[in-house]
Length: 485
Image (cartoon, rainbow, N blue to C red; front, side):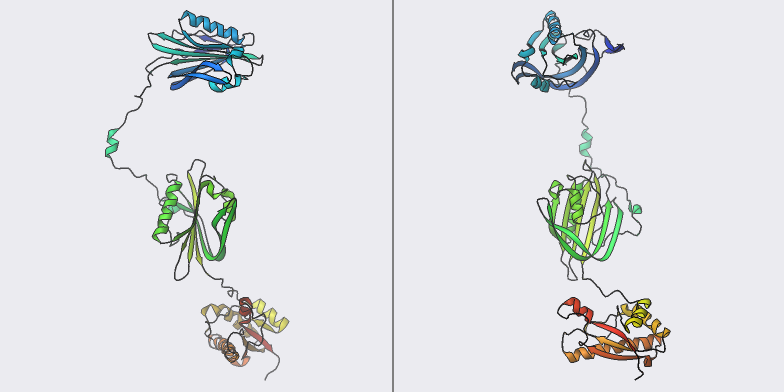
């Protein structure tokens, strides 16, 4: 260090629980008799304050700085604070020390305030009487300051703390600067590609890629669902909006070399390049409790730290349909990034006519009611042209008819009551006829087994006053005939 501490390293031996010290020539004071439970703290260089006057719980302080050694011991309760401090005062006098301040018992002011100021190595009950001295010494080594603090611990033992400070200039040659560093270009942090760690079947969404070095921990794609997103926060409550959309949800694990700021800034920059509008943004504790946020928008639960989180929601207007995407990043307690959830929501409407009838359901319906609605038969809008998605229904229908060649059926078309009655009648009959043609041409079902009929809007199964009812009324039915007309 360049300077030796006055209270240097002390060799400690313990016999029957009593500590004794072998003192070398560098010690300022010999150990106090019967001392035990020693503790020591050394600080290379520090500012330090000496008490030079007391007024209740207020102190006048002398600021000094240097190399500090602090040592504390426990003394038997028979050593009173006054007796201990008088011993140190006697030795300071022999050294021609300048006593800056000394107090005993009530003259030391508020005991708790003194403990707070001196910060002893061991917690003491400073309500009991104490003693203190601060002094300045001079020698060939320069100025030395010492403070001695003694307090009685509830008549159990007496606590003694001795501080020795060598008043040295602050050592400022402990490190060296490297001027060559300023002449070199910054070195990029190397980030390993971890795509090979992606969850099976996972892939980046075409709209937004990944940050280098990240990998997909979890991946989920849903063709149609309702997705809650945050559009505002009022106190502890989240204002959410539900989007009907195709959902792609990707959870990326991030390299520790990124900061959350860098992660979210990159996603914001990508959104700006897409000309996307930022609908909502929150960061840190402004996002509220992270557990509550995760529950509000139904993310996969992964509770981290409220301080280290960020949420962004963007909207991208597109001719083929609007697209929303949000990014939620989380970090650990020290800000190290944990994971980032990306959700891309492509707005769409529910296709609720995908469920086609199966053979068992068709058989049961005919046997029990004499008719069955052919769920899943799809036609072009306002046309009898059947869509390719209808083939599974035709497969089931053909299998049933081949199993019951002796039975005859009506194929009956129905519409809602939108438009002219005559037009609806014609459309329903044309669609019924189209079904029979597909079965005859594609599956060799005898045309004599089936008869097309259009009922138009005259046989609704639901109210035509709303979209849901109208959709149910647009149907084709297979009706069992009992005659051979």
